[in-house]
Length: 148
View 1 (tube, rainbow, N blue to C red):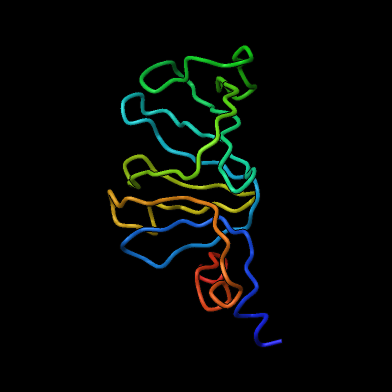
View 2: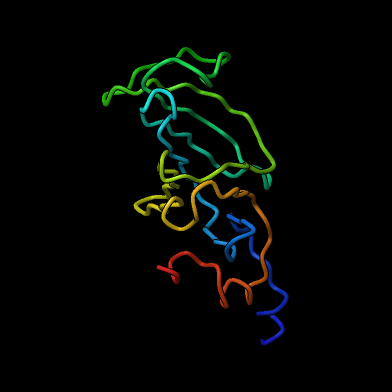
């Protein structure tokens, strides 16, 4: 039984940086939110996990400007709360981003908000990826719920 804890690996959403221990999240759909630096409007992207990659399904934004997707298989639509919803469906092995309280970078997963801009120092580079993490490593640290 003890060996099980050391050798059993579980697919995990991992947020890592050079400045802090890794954060482990369940393999569930998540949203990446930020405030656009020029437009000062909230943007967010919806990701699911497919074949150990991050599938960017949709992007939501309020104004057209720098960084707006220019290709989609479907027509953009406007949501009830005024966001333009753009279907993307692009896969990424990982995401790299810089966290800042200026843009209030956060991850939303279900009812849980992970305020990256409060966890990391401003302008910290983080990587989001899908990895198989040993159960013992998850027990000893990294689960976000335990760090709150």
